[in-house]
Length: 238
Image 1 (cartoon, helix red, strand yellow):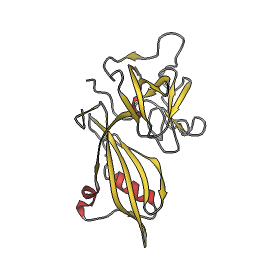
Image 2 (spheres, one colour):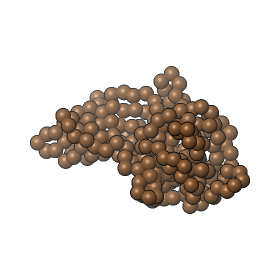
Image 3 (cartoon, helix red, strand yellow):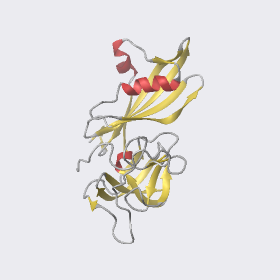
Image 4 (cartoon, helix red, strand yellow):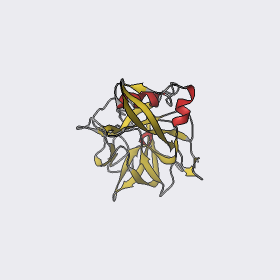
Protein backbone atom coordinates (compact mmCIF):
# COMPACT_ATOMS: atom_id res chain seq x y z
CA UNK A 1 0.00 0.00 0.00
CA UNK A 2 1.31 3.44 -0.93
CA UNK A 3 0.49 6.25 1.46
CA UNK A 4 -0.37 9.36 -0.54
CA UNK A 5 -0.23 13.00 0.51
CA UNK A 6 -3.48 14.24 1.98
CA UNK A 7 -6.16 16.46 0.67
CA UNK A 8 -4.91 19.51 -1.10
CA UNK A 9 -2.78 18.06 -3.84
CA UNK A 10 -3.59 18.96 -7.29
CA UNK A 11 -6.47 20.90 -8.86
CA UNK A 12 -8.62 23.86 -8.07
CA UNK A 13 -11.79 23.34 -6.07
CA UNK A 14 -12.98 25.97 -3.64
CA UNK A 15 -9.56 26.85 -2.35
CA UNK A 16 -7.98 23.43 -2.54
CA UNK A 17 -5.32 22.54 -5.04
CA UNK A 18 -6.88 20.00 -7.34
CA UNK A 19 -9.05 19.83 -10.40
CA UNK A 20 -12.58 21.00 -9.88
CA UNK A 21 -14.57 22.93 -12.34
CA UNK A 22 -16.64 25.43 -10.65
CA UNK A 23 -15.02 28.12 -12.57
CA UNK A 24 -13.39 26.89 -15.62
CA UNK A 25 -16.44 27.78 -17.51
CA UNK A 26 -19.27 27.91 -15.15
CA UNK A 27 -18.82 25.36 -12.49
CA UNK A 28 -16.44 22.36 -12.71
CA UNK A 29 -13.90 20.89 -10.03
CA UNK A 30 -10.60 19.99 -10.65
CA UNK A 31 -12.63 22.85 -10.45
CA UNK A 32 -13.94 24.79 -13.34
CA UNK A 33 -15.99 27.43 -11.80
CA UNK A 34 -13.92 28.74 -9.14
CA UNK A 35 -10.38 28.37 -10.04
CA UNK A 36 -9.04 29.43 -6.70
CA UNK A 37 -5.77 27.61 -6.49
CA UNK A 38 -4.93 26.01 -9.76
CA UNK A 39 -1.90 23.76 -10.01
CA UNK A 40 -0.01 26.11 -12.29
CA UNK A 41 3.23 24.26 -11.71
CA UNK A 42 1.90 21.09 -13.28
CA UNK A 43 3.36 20.51 -16.73
CA UNK A 44 0.89 20.20 -19.56
CA UNK A 45 0.57 17.03 -21.54
CA UNK A 46 2.01 16.46 -24.98
CA UNK A 47 1.93 13.77 -27.62
CA UNK A 48 4.59 11.78 -25.80
CA UNK A 49 4.70 10.39 -22.28
CA UNK A 50 2.31 11.62 -19.62
CA UNK A 51 3.72 14.46 -17.51
CA UNK A 52 5.07 13.69 -14.07
CA UNK A 53 6.54 10.57 -12.53
CA UNK A 54 4.69 7.24 -12.37
CA UNK A 55 3.75 5.96 -8.90
CA UNK A 56 3.60 2.20 -8.65
CA UNK A 57 0.87 0.71 -6.45
CA UNK A 58 -0.83 4.02 -5.65
CA UNK A 59 -4.23 2.74 -6.80
CA UNK A 60 -5.28 -0.77 -7.75
CA UNK A 61 -6.39 -1.55 -11.27
CA UNK A 62 -10.17 -1.98 -11.26
CA UNK A 63 -10.70 -0.09 -7.99
CA UNK A 64 -14.06 1.69 -7.86
CA UNK A 65 -13.58 5.28 -6.75
CA UNK A 66 -15.98 8.04 -5.74
CA UNK A 67 -15.79 11.81 -6.10
CA UNK A 68 -15.41 13.68 -2.81
CA UNK A 69 -14.91 17.24 -1.67
CA UNK A 70 -16.59 18.84 -4.68
CA UNK A 71 -19.30 21.49 -4.21
CA UNK A 72 -22.83 20.73 -5.40
CA UNK A 73 -22.64 23.45 -8.08
CA UNK A 74 -19.29 22.20 -9.36
CA UNK A 75 -17.99 19.11 -11.16
CA UNK A 76 -14.77 17.14 -11.20
CA UNK A 77 -12.81 17.58 -14.43
CA UNK A 78 -11.37 14.44 -15.98
CA UNK A 79 -8.56 15.42 -18.32
CA UNK A 80 -6.64 13.98 -21.25
CA UNK A 81 -3.39 13.93 -19.21
CA UNK A 82 -2.29 14.77 -15.67
CA UNK A 83 -2.28 18.52 -15.00
CA UNK A 84 -4.90 21.24 -14.98
CA UNK A 85 -3.69 22.67 -18.28
CA UNK A 86 -4.86 19.65 -20.24
CA UNK A 87 -8.10 19.15 -22.15
CA UNK A 88 -11.22 18.11 -20.22
CA UNK A 89 -12.52 14.87 -21.76
CA UNK A 90 -15.48 14.42 -19.40
CA UNK A 91 -16.73 15.51 -15.98
CA UNK A 92 -18.07 13.75 -12.89
CA UNK A 93 -20.82 14.97 -10.59
CA UNK A 94 -19.97 15.96 -6.97
CA UNK A 95 -21.12 12.64 -5.47
CA UNK A 96 -20.46 10.38 -8.46
CA UNK A 97 -19.37 6.80 -7.81
CA UNK A 98 -18.05 4.08 -10.08
CA UNK A 99 -14.97 5.82 -11.48
CA UNK A 100 -12.83 2.78 -12.31
CA UNK A 101 -9.09 3.12 -11.80
CA UNK A 102 -6.81 1.80 -14.53
CA UNK A 103 -4.03 1.38 -11.98
CA UNK A 104 -1.94 4.25 -13.37
CA UNK A 105 -0.92 7.21 -11.19
CA UNK A 106 1.38 10.17 -11.87
CA UNK A 107 3.04 12.57 -9.45
CA UNK A 108 3.36 16.22 -10.53
CA UNK A 109 5.19 18.90 -8.50
CA UNK A 110 2.11 19.81 -6.45
CA UNK A 111 -0.38 17.04 -7.10
CA UNK A 112 -1.05 13.37 -7.72
CA UNK A 113 -3.33 12.17 -10.51
CA UNK A 114 -5.14 8.88 -11.13
CA UNK A 115 -6.23 7.59 -14.51
CA UNK A 116 -9.88 6.54 -14.36
CA UNK A 117 -12.67 5.43 -16.66
CA UNK A 118 -16.19 6.84 -16.32
CA UNK A 119 -19.04 5.91 -18.65
CA UNK A 120 -16.59 4.54 -21.21
CA UNK A 121 -14.33 7.63 -21.22
CA UNK A 122 -10.80 7.35 -19.81
CA UNK A 123 -8.86 10.31 -18.47
CA UNK A 124 -7.00 11.73 -15.47
CA UNK A 125 -8.40 13.26 -12.27
CA UNK A 126 -6.75 14.78 -9.20
CA UNK A 127 -6.41 12.20 -6.44
CA UNK A 128 -7.42 14.68 -3.74
CA UNK A 129 -10.96 14.55 -5.15
CA UNK A 130 -11.13 10.75 -5.29
CA UNK A 131 -11.70 8.21 -2.54
CA UNK A 132 -13.47 5.02 -1.56
CA UNK A 133 -16.96 4.87 -0.03
CA UNK A 134 -16.64 3.37 3.43
CA UNK A 135 -19.16 2.45 6.12
CA UNK A 136 -22.23 4.54 6.95
CA UNK A 137 -23.53 5.04 10.47
CA UNK A 138 -25.85 7.28 12.50
CA UNK A 139 -23.72 9.97 14.13
CA UNK A 140 -26.57 11.79 15.87
CA UNK A 141 -25.92 10.48 19.39
CA UNK A 142 -22.22 11.37 19.09
CA UNK A 143 -23.06 14.92 18.06
CA UNK A 144 -25.61 15.37 20.86
CA UNK A 145 -23.36 13.85 23.53
CA UNK A 146 -22.66 17.26 25.09
CA UNK A 147 -26.38 18.04 25.27
CA UNK A 148 -26.39 20.86 22.72
CA UNK A 149 -28.46 20.41 19.56
CA UNK A 150 -27.03 22.38 16.61
CA UNK A 151 -29.43 25.07 15.37
CA UNK A 152 -29.29 27.81 12.77
CA UNK A 153 -31.30 30.21 10.70
CA UNK A 154 -31.12 27.89 7.68
CA UNK A 155 -30.63 24.24 6.75
CA UNK A 156 -27.16 25.10 5.45
CA UNK A 157 -26.22 26.78 8.75
CA UNK A 158 -27.09 23.63 10.68
CA UNK A 159 -25.12 21.54 8.19
CA UNK A 160 -22.10 23.81 8.55
CA UNK A 161 -22.30 23.56 12.33
CA UNK A 162 -22.34 19.77 12.14
CA UNK A 163 -19.48 19.71 9.61
CA UNK A 164 -17.36 21.92 11.87
CA UNK A 165 -17.57 19.24 14.56
CA UNK A 166 -15.71 16.80 12.29
CA UNK A 167 -13.26 19.25 10.70
CA UNK A 168 -9.70 19.68 11.95
CA UNK A 169 -7.46 22.73 11.98
CA UNK A 170 -4.22 20.76 11.55
CA UNK A 171 -4.41 19.71 8.83
CA UNK A 172 -7.03 22.26 7.81
CA UNK A 173 -10.03 20.34 6.53
CA UNK A 174 -11.75 21.19 3.28
CA UNK A 175 -15.48 21.59 3.98
CA UNK A 176 -17.92 21.79 1.05
CA UNK A 177 -21.66 21.51 0.56
CA UNK A 178 -21.73 18.52 -1.80
CA UNK A 179 -25.53 18.17 -2.10
CA UNK A 180 -27.65 21.33 -2.15
CA UNK A 181 -30.07 21.92 0.71
CA UNK A 182 -33.72 21.02 0.15
CA UNK A 183 -36.75 21.57 2.34
CA UNK A 184 -39.79 19.33 2.76
CA UNK A 185 -41.16 17.63 5.86
CA UNK A 186 -37.51 17.59 6.85
CA UNK A 187 -34.67 19.79 5.67
CA UNK A 188 -31.74 17.95 4.06
CA UNK A 189 -28.22 18.94 3.13
CA UNK A 190 -24.94 17.08 2.63
CA UNK A 191 -21.47 18.33 3.52
CA UNK A 192 -18.12 16.69 2.75
CA UNK A 193 -15.33 17.19 5.26
CA UNK A 194 -12.03 16.23 3.60
CA UNK A 195 -8.63 16.03 5.28
CA UNK A 196 -8.93 14.95 8.91
CA UNK A 197 -5.37 13.96 9.71
CA UNK A 198 -5.80 10.22 9.23
CA UNK A 199 -3.81 8.20 6.68
CA UNK A 200 -6.64 5.78 5.96
CA UNK A 201 -9.66 8.09 6.39
CA UNK A 202 -9.91 10.82 3.77
CA UNK A 203 -12.88 12.43 5.48
CA UNK A 204 -16.62 12.19 5.99
CA UNK A 205 -19.81 12.75 4.01
CA UNK A 206 -22.45 14.08 6.39
CA UNK A 207 -26.11 13.82 5.35
CA UNK A 208 -27.83 16.19 7.74
CA UNK A 209 -31.59 16.24 8.43
CA UNK A 210 -33.23 19.22 10.14
CA UNK A 211 -36.61 20.25 11.54
CA UNK A 212 -38.04 23.76 11.42
CA UNK A 213 -38.48 25.44 14.80
CA UNK A 214 -39.39 28.92 16.04
CA UNK A 215 -35.84 30.17 15.51
CA UNK A 216 -35.13 28.59 12.12
CA UNK A 217 -33.81 25.03 11.83
CA UNK A 218 -32.62 22.48 14.37
CA UNK A 219 -30.71 19.24 13.86
CA UNK A 220 -32.72 16.06 13.77
CA UNK A 221 -30.32 13.34 12.62
CA UNK A 222 -26.97 12.90 10.86
CA UNK A 223 -26.03 10.02 8.59
CA UNK A 224 -22.23 9.80 8.35
CA UNK A 225 -20.39 8.01 5.55
CA UNK A 226 -16.67 7.51 5.98
CA UNK A 227 -14.60 8.32 2.89
CA UNK A 228 -11.49 6.16 2.70
CA UNK A 229 -8.12 7.07 1.23
CA UNK A 230 -6.67 3.68 0.28
CA UNK A 231 -9.55 1.23 0.11
CA UNK A 232 -12.12 -0.65 2.16
CA UNK A 233 -11.84 -4.12 3.69
CA UNK A 234 -14.34 -5.78 5.96
CA UNK A 235 -16.36 -2.56 6.03
CA UNK A 236 -13.42 -0.51 7.33
CA UNK A 237 -10.89 1.84 5.75
CA UNK A 238 -7.51 0.22 5.20
